[in-house]
Image: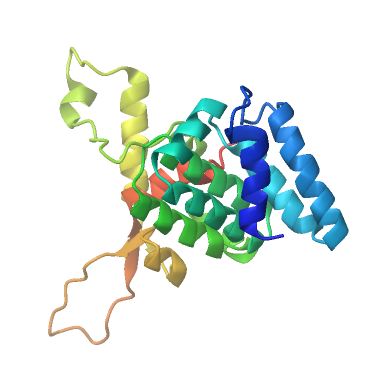
Length: 237
């Protein structure tokens, strides 16, 4: 069975006329889809694929009406849904299925564009266990990741820290300071994939003629990296 066939199973049980919830609540529609996928997986000895799809279905955060609207408004979305299941077929760890589900949910809700979704799916598909383990060493503190980072976030200035009548709460000031501190953190020998994906960027180095040797290149985390951690990875439990 292809990814397209699996999508048809899910669409039949979830998205084409049944008023039920397509969410982590494990409503009857999700259970029916999983039951059919499980039966297929057992017959074809593809239990890992079943588990990846099951995790995906349990993680997505949209309801039946949103599914119907998503597929009816644009016929290309049916193709995208099939592509999602094909990508799941290439994954091996639960975290990948969860991240794909979160990225797909953001797209269905209209919060990200298709090109941005494609970039996220490329990252997730290549974020294997080895890279996940390395990524752990780059993650910010939980006081930062316990809320979703806004790409348009503006740091709170010194006037908020020392002013008598700040319009910002202590929590907001503390969060902003932690975010600024995280972005100011410099790293050396960053994994090349993290640079290619836009998680880290090279810091410009001043070069003078009296240098005997070039200094070691340093890198700093990007806004996109913090956005990815808090919206897609969500490793803050």
